[in-house]
Length: 431
Image 1 (cartoon, rainbow, N blue to C red):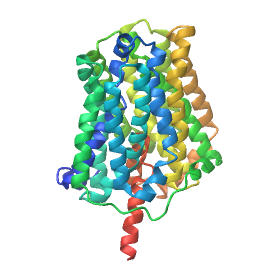
Image 2 (cartoon, one colour):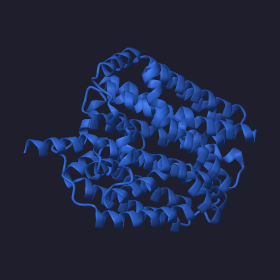
Image 3 (spheres, rainbow, N blue to C red):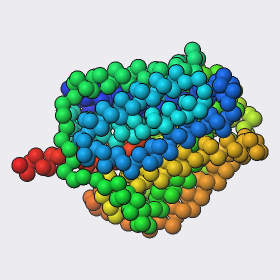
Image 4 (cartoon, rainbow, N blue to C red):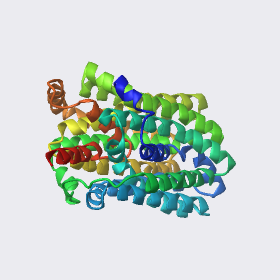
């Protein structure tokens, strides 16, 4: 990002800081529960497969919500969508903390997933609309919130989880309540998008082979990714704080390579070769997890190192979707999010059943096979990715705002964040 954009990072209206703070807390949710998974299993007398449903309910609801967030925001406006999302997170995070059973927590995590989808789908749009310094300044701030949230989530979860497994849930509820109050009082009304979205548009878009190919690749990758998140904490046999530090290191690498490493690799080697490499390395690390599950240091090393491959893949896969999809970006992102989160939601539950029927080595090996299947599937679209790279090199795609938008899309949605704001600006200029 430019130096001018960086200079505006600390010169923003209070409303922007309120939403950015909420973004940090929201992104913390990606790894927040990882350090307390073993504790939940022991203290609530639940099997690992039952605990894994915390991911399944959250992600499956998020997947379905991806079809609705654009429809909702285009009718009630970004600010109201933001407030509804924040309110749902506060309520369901608090209820999860008050729950006394694993089934209750799983159910409340589903409501949390709905709130998070609504919030993230509009948070970047609101920051772009309100920030000083234009698009670039807003994106610097959003990326800072993204990186801080991803890295801090596991650490905060570990520290609060060391006090009680309820701590991370109550912590999120309190922090989001503060963000909700600040958003309501400080944020001005935001304009509605010029065009109302249809719920069926994302589903119809999957008829395009290019979009379907990228979405299925992401589904297979997410199968491996959330298998690791859901089951790597168990063989480490660490306390909540120690687990928090392991995933804190993982989160730092993931955030750094998402924002800086992925664009560099794409520019140097192209989208397809970079993705083949990142996916293959991630599959190898999953295979090593499966082979050396009983060796603590090996599990820790593989998990931390996977942050590099995951960060690169997260951004480049989403960017590739936007480059090759023959539909509007909001529609493409919603369709892609719907498919990939299905993989992320089903994988932890399926992994739990594999552990019960065989052993804990099997889910990681199956995850590695799934990711390699994603590489094979991606290779069928090699030509379309090469054409997209050529088009981007000619100036058809990929300015700085677009790349940051792909990062936003990957970490929770934001399918129409920049696009809707640009529509509003164009409409204002036309008047």
